[in-house]
Image (tube, rainbow, N blue to C red):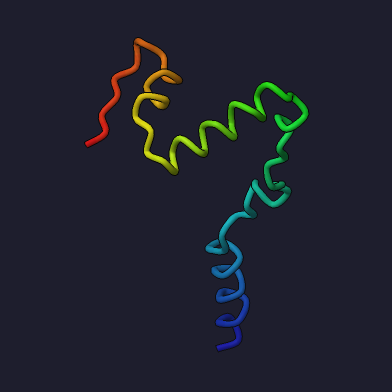
Length: 70
């Protein structure tokens, strides 16, 4: 059985998963906070979601988007 070990090693190398291409993923960076108008809108949007303010949410949505709250 001297060939068993080299064959097993070769099979393990062939069947090993490829290295993930996302090894250098970084978490998202919030660059929008530097835009005061967008930061204000985002705060309003978050508050509207908490209040379940349908009118505000619809006013912030483009007219050509199908919206369904159900």
